[in-house]
Image (tube, rainbow, N blue to C red; front, top):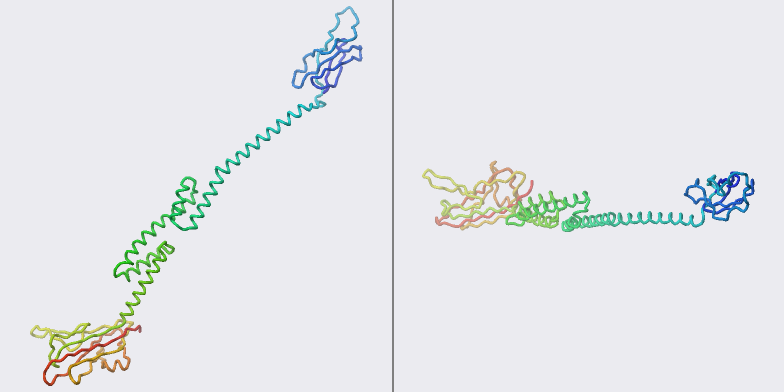
Length: 356
């Protein structure tokens, strides 16, 4: 660093190059006076006079009749700081301060990162993992466990989804209890099928889907068996007669043909009540059985509402089918006994209902 100083003997301005705080001995080239100065330290005032720390000037000033000028320099000025190179100690102090600052910044960064990781990242990953696990189980217990464990930190999306699962479970259970009470009750075949089909339609992936499907199949099988059994028709007729008079009435499981005479008495025709074959169906004669108490008897007949008639024995032999949409009755003419005695008469006709 370059400083400017005036010679205390003759006042000649001089420039010196020295380090801050250094004591320098100077010899004035003008008057030969030798003196010493101490350069100011860095940051200290540079315009105040410096007191020499060395010996007093070696040459005596000439007497001129005037008071001798001060042997101290009037002022010491910094001319150029660009030539100043800090000492090793100062450089080490700056480097240490920089290192400490970097360490503090790194510690703050790592501390903040650790706080974010353990306070936010880890809980978020745990919540996501528990959500996926509960979702994969498709179990309301796992869903309720998730909602309990993450009642404070579950995301809005996950909470909404899980609450929907719980509501679906409640609705599913309520619907199942209602359907089950019908499907497992007495005489539940048709109503049970309706109830179970309604449950499966409302809850296609319900918790009780397998049980509902299993019970539904059982009920459908029952209905199919009942419908198949219902296709087999049997007309049973029995009475006691002497050929002209009935004793005890005319018995037919499809009903007898009755009328009231002029005296108010119930009379029976020797035939069954009219029987209807539904549209889209036909009743085929598959068998017949005939018993009577005489040596011989008239054959019973099948008589349709259009006037067509056929003997039962011929109907059986010809595999005859009574067409749908028609009424028919069974006519049972009886022969008179020669003695007038009453005898038993019975007839069974078997038919099978087919789809036309």
